[in-house]
Length: 303
Image 1 (cartoon, rainbow, N blue to C red):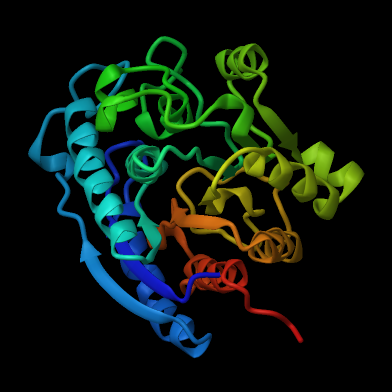
Image 2: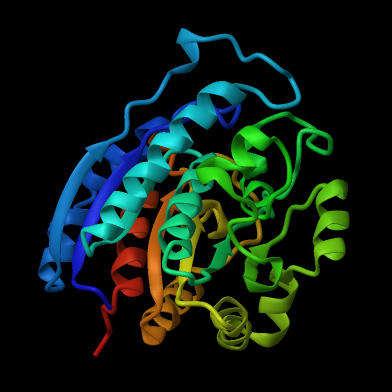
């Protein structure tokens, strides 16, 4: 795995209704991410946080895509940062913020490699599919739409950041840990043929088999793959401080196995941890777990 790491925080919480995930980057830093990465032998630089608009500054706007203008502005800036980080030879680690920031993360990574005529894959570990559009979303919250935007669907202000769409091919996207889907999302996933491993798949087949298949999907014909890890993919008993908790999630060891298998490939080209909400956490438990998972994704082993 790359040993040069650059950390960037995107403290955006406009993409969802529950406040607090804007403090996620600070919580993960307080949990010792930078120091723990250095202990692993990585060269670490912290780029700080991208400036974002807070909810008190602007009206929500269109109820079908709340704070669309502000989210798009943040994601455009974030995509530029991502390209710059990759040009510098660093592996980006992105700290959220709600999951809408993935629009900027994936746009920047895909744009960087597109200029090299290379494709990227996308491993999406989440309790939710996040593949709603303004037409299908029950809430209008953009944190339920980022995967759709990465696949070229939804609002053009988001789907065409960096000037092209889609950012990734549906055939190179794999979802793992899904257990809470809206009706419109189920239709879209089936229409696009996206590879989805639900919690039932993990229960029946085990995380090793599920991740083996997911890694094969995101690696087929790509130069590498982005990892977007929503902390709500983990069961709330292990990760209580998340934006949208859903019971029945991935266990502590299953989450680590997934990240250890990512590290084994040597092909992760970006990592983001999103939806850490210290306001509803217990003694920073969720951020601490996020740090541990990042270390596993970068090659930390038991023996």
